[in-house]
Image (cartoon, rainbow, N blue to C red; front, side):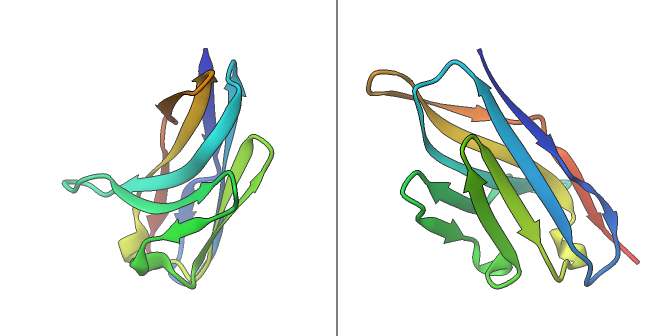
Length: 118
């Protein structure tokens, strides 16, 4: 069984920072990629950023230069600086894992609320 456990959400004012973390645990061979998605009320879930096992990153245009993803073993971090009200959403961790030889499966965390408001 695989689990993704997120932490770090909260309420901040515009211009402030937050750091999210997501730890993958359980039975899997390796991590192909990990990343963050977000979903605002009434909107679809969108990609924020993903990092591959080789370290390649792909950021949404709306967060480039403000958000930074990093990974340490089975944990991925999202440093969010210069936060804006439009960053308000539930942030979901996603991991693409090798669960058997050559077999990949995607998993989601439970989501963490980020609210940016004055």
